[in-house]
Length: 289
Image (cartoon, rainbow, N blue to C red):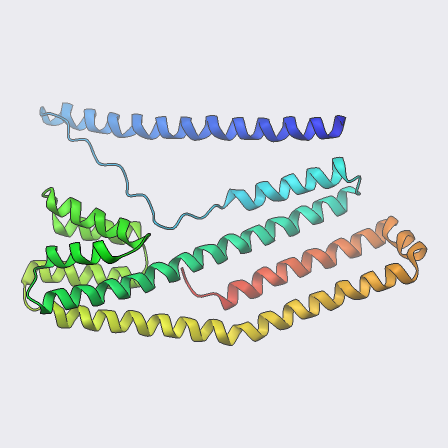
């Protein structure tokens, strides 16, 4: 109970510290923007023009959560499970690596989802443009038919253009919120059309085909790397199966081996190398986000 209480207090203290740090960071950013605007107004002798808040990125990676989970796993294994410190640290590293891989997989799935939605929205816009609608009406029709998360980005574009913002700035902000090659191509096509005019439907149709080709290549690449991933997982499963078989066959000798410093070091090193190998292979087989 004492160890459990200590772990709960440690987690609560970490949460409070992170909450206070995050609020202080937001306040410092607000003071910094206000100070720059007031300083510029004093130099120019005019009313200050407050800069807008930076665009919120579409893809948010939770970099600190895997390491926080790894630290919690280390503390839990050491304080509650009674494991040796080297095994506790090794378990924490494995949990952190698995959490990092899970976050990367979720981010990749979110990118694939919004790219597929963008291709569908472009097809809707092309149909509306060929029917005689303007660019604004085509955006609104794509906005009505698009599911989240793409409809949030299209709604931001339509609302800002309707309120009178510069279209070039609106499209540039879109590429900052969603820093993907597909959205850069889409925003560039809209920006060029807004400046020089002309027929937008053929250009958007070409952009849509390019995005679909990119999605198809990405799917083929994932299919080709699936066999390698399955092979790696199979080898790891066989390794742990052999370890369990040896434990049940002669538990006394295995317990004695794991209780020594050399045995602990060898086992911990093997597990850490396996986790690093999984992360490295996943990094090589994953496309850019």
